[in-house]
Length: 403
Image (tube, rainbow, N blue to C red; front, side):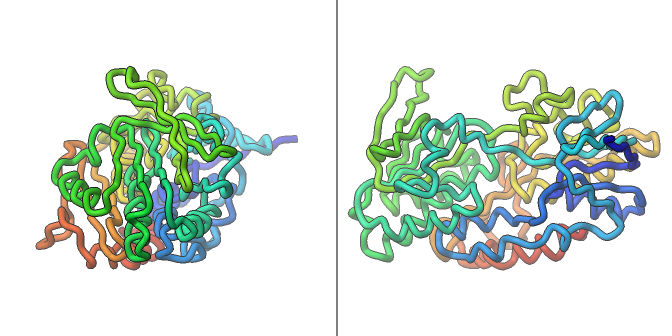
């Protein structure tokens, strides 16, 4: 018969947000913290773009989940399947129910391959790959190396996605490799983006426009991939300008890097925590306090929250201390006192040894954290930060609640 257990604080998700938050709660003296996470491996996902671009090995992105779980935390090795915030209960896949006093929701998002017909069944073959699936990132690199002429298409979906800069990072890594190999002039590189500009912050967009020109990339603004015909090696782009009046275009490809539409996990969408006005089903929070809009004992952060920031690990690094501070306030019957300003960072690899560090907040203006360096320019030093500095920060400081 299914069992029932109780914990004072329950954290849903053992990814970046869940582990960081749990570690900070333990450092704040909270003795009864449980993390619900079924995975046995923990992934440093920002490295997958570099794996796909041939600049890092996949193995460096993976560690045992047990090695990052904070000491003193109860690890519930099951998947959550429902949350009843009124009864304060989490239902697990095995039928167990976990009751809580306070809840932190951060299970990440899901990749909706079914919303890009033809892509799911073709992944890893017929010239189709993606860095958004861990085991396919090395396949991306193999396909890039095998492409010496023809047409290479890189796509980006509409809506919020994990690391909004990743779809174009791989474009630049591939183009720079083809340039070095002497075949770039023989490859028509197309980047299809639903956005009207290459980046939402003008100061960084100006630099990226020069990068695009340097490689001769054909950027199809306000275009979105809506279907693949892998047998014929064709991708269908919809022109979203003027409400879609531009119609559709079918492009034959030799290689295509696809990025799936993304949303909150289906089981989250079915709970009362989901934003009822959002078809993507993200958890409804106050964008500054990250407290749930209707359930004051619930907080959410990371990719699953509907706060209008870029969904990146850098955002989590700034969100986690706010969630912990405000949760402690609520536990002490105080009003939340910490505020998240929407900070996010998008380290965009513009070449195989150069990077543009894009830092910004809710106001969509540059919000630099590194003194005396103009981060609106491509830099080798920023590449070193991306390749070596940020992974070190992640594994040794962030997941331990220190940074």
